[in-house]
Length: 72
Image (cartoon, rainbow, N blue to C red):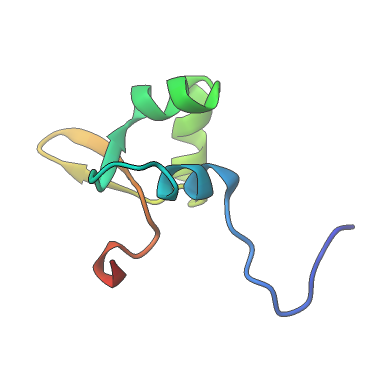
């Protein structure tokens, strides 16, 4: 088992999104799926299990670029 005491575990997808050089704060499910090579269904599962931060806005689900956008 690969665990590190006291270290915060971060999701590789969230890390990837936070390092993109643009001013966006969120991405669509389709965009994240295409950038990561995952299926849209897998992205939805990750949102459902809480490993990808997402919000609903005007009928759309948006994946947040960073876990805490207010800290930026």
